[in-house]
Image (cartoon, rainbow, N blue to C red; front, side):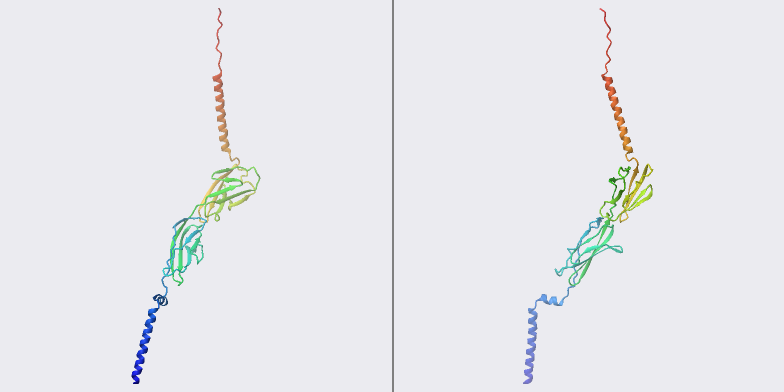
Length: 275
C-alpha cells in the first residue's frame, strides 16, 4: 500500500506545478516578456539637409539635425557634429543635447560635415554631406583724410596740415578681419598694413606720383586700386573749364556783333531838289 500512496502524491505535485507555470505564462503580458528578453539593437536615423554651394560670409551657417529619430523609442538623441577640411577640422559650435549647430564659413574651401546620433542604448548612426564655400573677392574701400579714394583718383596737396590718416578696408562679407594691404609708390613698396598715419605729404618735389594699393584676403584673393598724387588734382578739369568759358565768350561776342550789324541802319542820301 505504501508504494501506491507515494505514486499518487508524485503525480499530484507534478500536475500542480505544470498548471501553475501555464497560468503564470498566460497572465504575464507578452510585451513585458519581450522587454526582458530582447535588447534594443536598432540604430537611430540621422537626417540633415545642406546646400552644396554657399557663398563665403561672416555670419555662421546653421546646421539642423532635428529631423533625426529613433525607430524604437521617443527618447532624446545625442548629437555629435564634425566638419573636416582636408587634415584640418573646421570649427563647429554645438551642444550634444541640441540638434542644431553653427559652422563658420568665412574661409573658402570644400568641407565634409558629419552628423553622428546616439540613442539611449548607445546605438549610433552617421550621415555625411559635403559643402563648398565659394570665395568672395575683396572690394576695396580706401580713404586719405576726408577724401575717398577711387580707381584713378587724383589727389592734390591738401590745404590742412598733417598728419593725415590713410586706410583701406575690404567691404565684402566674410573678409573684414582677415585682409592685408601693401601700398606701392612709383612701383616701390611704400607702406605695409591697412591703416597708417602720414606725417609728410608724399608728393615732395614731384609733379605727380603713382600709387597702387594691393589688398589680399585670407583666402589669397587679391585686388588692386590705382590712384595718383598730383600738385594740381583738377588740372584737366580746369583746362576744360577755361576752354568752355572761352568758347562761350567768343559765341557771346559774335552774337553781339551780329546784332549790332543788324540794328545799324545807314541813312539814305536824298538829293536836294531845286524847284
